[in-house]
Image (tube, rainbow, N blue to C red; front, side):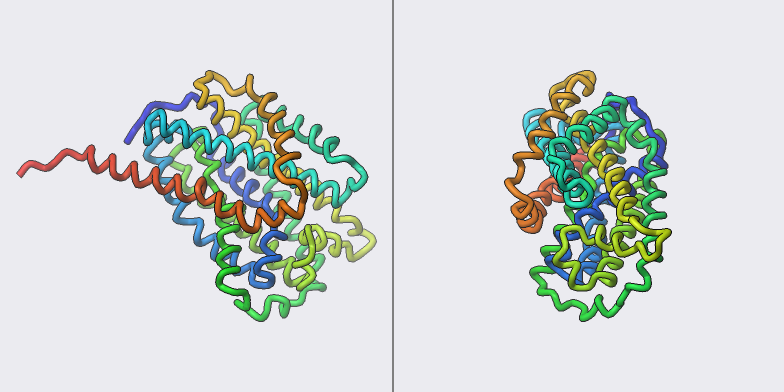
Length: 370
């Protein structure tokens, strides 16, 4: 089924699209504590199974991208479900993207306060950070993803360097015994992994901007596997270095980084980790901010998303303060309610759209006369 072209003219290369996915997935290394407290030393197994579980929906997303060329998620919803139902689903997705943006802004503020700026009120962290993100969004998608390749390679270098520096502290016995976690807890963690770091519906908002649509599938899959592999290595590294202590830490990867300063030359590498995480979070929030702005503007049938950026930025800031009353509640909801609710946006809606597209395509095939 072919439809009209998208109003989005901000084109990016297939390579930029791939590295954007790598950076987006890689940035969730900040949130591994949510899973470690559930599945403990079996967390790496949950991540591996979550990676496999995410693949069917990635292929469904790729199918939708192919069937609706140059159309983003909001436009696809309108084509498949019609204007009333499609608009309702799109409103829910706008709320979803806005919530993801606010949650990540809150996570970034909490991370900086716990790591290097403990005396600074979070509002003085969030506002400058969000101003930088707003500037990138106003400049457009091409500017947001321009440095994704550099960010990804910096992340690879940091991963390799820190893994080497903490190698003497590694105890692979910390990975055992295997599969001692109850099936319910393991499924809970797999669901968390599938919907949070490996949720990829956001890229249905970005894929139409890729110049060479024939390379979207390869870029999507490569970006996903590379980003997922990075997180898997981070989880395994933190477990073998920290052992059961990792289950009690809010920021296990940060603590691992603190242990990497093994010589006078390599002291305070934790600051480099803070900088890297802030860069990746800046990229992710900018991407989510852009997707939210585009989605809302198309829902309102506006010609440009840019007049909405400052208003949406203010909403993101306020929402980040009121979304959860405390970090403890945030942790509890992230482990229970959020992964179940996110299934609606990452799996159920895309699957229903896939079925509707298949059924419509079958109806459009002319009957063969006998």
